[in-house]
Amino acid sequence: MSKVSQRSAGSPQSSAPQGNDIYNIVLLVVDILVLIAKFWYTIAEAIVGLFRPPPLEEVRGKVVLITGTGHGMGKQMALQYGQLGATILCWDVNEQTNNQTVKEIQAKGGKAFGYVCNVTKREEIIELAQKVRKEHGFVSVVVNNAGIMPCHPLLEHTENEIRLMYDINVVSHYWIIQAFLPDMIERNEGSIVALSSCAGLFGLINLVPYCGTKFAVRGYMTALAEELRQKNPQNNIKLTTIFPYMIDTGLCKNPRYRFPSLFKLIAPDVAAASIIEAQRQGLEEASIPRHYVTIEKLGRLIPRKAMRLVNDFLDTGVDTDKQ
Ligand SMILES: NC(=O)c1ccc[n+]([C@@H]2O[C@H](COP(=O)([O-])OP(=O)(O)OC[C@H]3O[C@@H](n4cnc5c(N)ncnc54)[C@H](O)[C@@H]3O)[C@@H](O)[C@H]2O)c1
Ligand SMILES: *[C@@H]1O[C@H](CO)[C@@H](O)[C@H](O)[C@H]1NC(C)=O
Ligand SMILES: *[C@@H]1O[C@H](CO)[C@@H](O)[C@H](O)[C@H]1NC(C)=O
Image 1 (cartoon, rainbow, N blue to C red):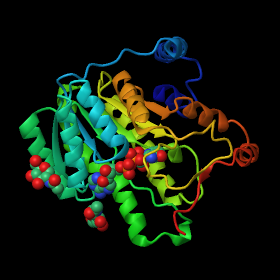
Image 2: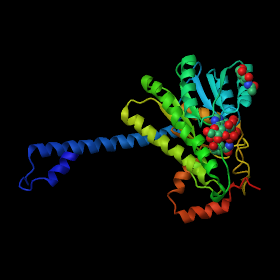
Image 3: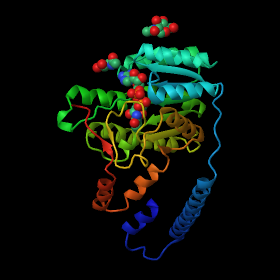
Image 4: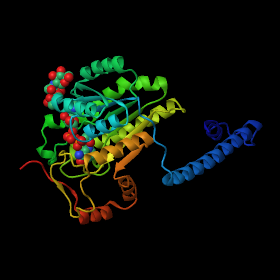
């Protein structure tokens, strides 16, 4: 392509196309035809995929690392991966609740190991990563799940609160990925899962910095997928970004909805099963419920003003956690 454009910018005296030019034009036409054919083949494949979900990858005998396993979805994922026969590495800042998760997995005959880790501490992550790789070998699945959600108007957020939220919800993911991705690249296998949120799809009041962190997760995961693919066209490392709606873990303190039957809180174990399915299917993005991602895509096609009318009608969101 660059050769063709060079020609048009080049010497005006060679107005008649020469053999080389014709060759380049033919190449370009072939390129375009191949693009069109592959483009439509991929679309057809995606449509077929809608009716035939991808097969589930085996996790039995594999090592799965999850952050934030002391409570909520992290805990439920740990329990369920344990039931599937994986070895679970449980990372949480809360030693007591994390120990409890490990005990529950072991009581059901699963394999689990607990580690205390405040994911805001980069050195702690690097040290712990070396330790678990030595003790357990290749980590096949990494789930960046730990997160916090202070909920009030932007002007009421303190500096510490905002910085801590970014450190836990986003920055820690970079250190964890930098620690485990090199092994995955070497073997060209593995999965990285990141918890974004519906707050990473839509802008919500009382959650301005939180939405920032969850859009950030969506952004870096999309970019990392491109980086892996362009560095290795045969890349087989799967990246999965999860966009849960409100899950009944206590994280979301004051949910508000006009139509509770339409937007009911989802149980943490149901959400965990959905995340595990998405990881095992190798989905790039998965919302809980699944159709929310599609609604967001369609929503972008309509004018914002029109979308706001629908939002106001649905009157769904989270109220401040102060007072
Ligand atoms: N609950 C929801 O409605 C909802 C919706 C969308 C997205 N999410 C996201 O899903 C993830 C899990 O949410 P949840 O509701 O299960 O949370 P949760 O509050 O129930 O559990 C979070 C766990 O993370 C741990 N944790 C907190 N800070 C940590 C730190 N600095 N280092 C290590 N561990 C730490 C906590 O000790 C706790 O065990 C979060 O990233 C959250 O933002 C939750
Ligand atoms: C958690 O478990 C570890 C290892 O079994 C133990 O050393 C530690 O004291 C426990 N901590 C708490 C708070 O229960
Ligand atoms: C984790 O470390 C940060 C500082 O890096 C601190 O502000 C936060 O309180 C710690 N979290 C817990 C639960 O101890």
